[in-house]
Image 1 (cartoon, rainbow over the protein chains, first blue to last red):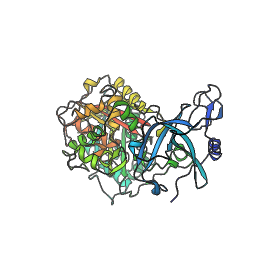
Image 2: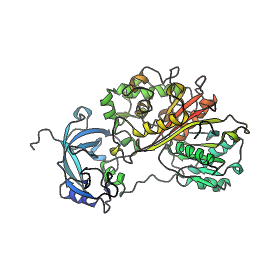
Image 3: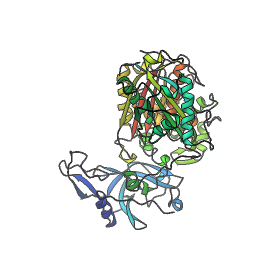
Image 4: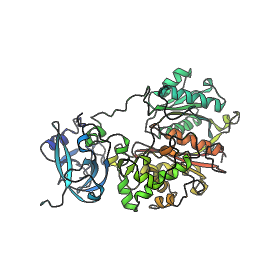
Length: 137
Length: 380
């Protein structure tokens, strides 16, 4: 079994295209300048408001997580694994996996610094995060 | 809605609950409906409104010979039935229906005649959560918990205490799915499902059904059973996928829905004799106790640890054993309502003495949606 892959729609395609280029891009409300997640056709902050795409820093902190011991299809080889919510330095949060770190509670401290990286899953590239500690920015 | 103008006059579960591979989801709906009709002293000919999730209410109506002039198939997760009751009350007061049948039946464990749970790859969950290996609700509903625990200093032992406390209630209930004695040490030594949640901190998975009949308080006076009056109701929605819950330390839908119900019922927390908070996982009642205002922010875990929600405590909670020990088909809300009805009627397995007002809080999705009912054996 393979891991689930996203099914992009016209409104979300730029997000997934960016991931394929190794970039994390977020939608931003043109009118208010506020970023948001997940991508949607109109701004949630202004009625019918236009949305533009912005490359973000990829820096984040660990907002919350679980360590799953009953793997979803395709995850059997990395059981258990971390399902996390990363809070981007720009504000919005997104679900992700953590890589480059042991999936043990003693290694995972809430609010620890993370940085985005990308994982190719059967040709579909998804953003994941790894610890920022030790990385020179 | 003026408090006490609409009542639940029929309430029943299926004959058996638990592991029922020989009964389809549809049959569980109808079996529960038959039992609720007996309880209400009514027949399908008396019903002109039907409610349930998705395709069920019209199928149940067809198979039971009901010709509804009012239909509600709201699906907002496990709290859907709270919304059905609320909407039915509004419809009855507006003259759109006189008596409404609300059914639930789900072969959640055996999956007999149960449509598959599927989420499209193009939806928010399919695109932005499924690729990260979510595997059922145990990997989604649980995600906010560690932030809540860090914020309020909740220990693993305190989380386990929620499951242990509800097991005390379940041990008084012959119909409960899990009844064996349980200690905090047992919980911490048990199988990890999704850290920080061990198996006893996750709901059971069962087959069962339940049904309600709702009509006006005026009509209820002519019926044989003991009416359970609806004093207040609420509903709310906030987000769809769990990662977009605005604040992992508080559920906005709990705050909004409960506040609406309290305001409508014109009662205060001190008036509540009995409490149900939908517990798909052990952290949900902790959010609920705080967000419904029964304890201050940060005090829920200690409140449970001190035994206040346990048998003999000052705020008996989840007295059927809850989703953690009693039953959980997938959409447990119907069973939380059933227990509130039993408690205010004085007929629960683990009956709390002198219950007049019960508060029952439902949740749908991952803190996504909520519904609230305040029920009583007195009209005001």
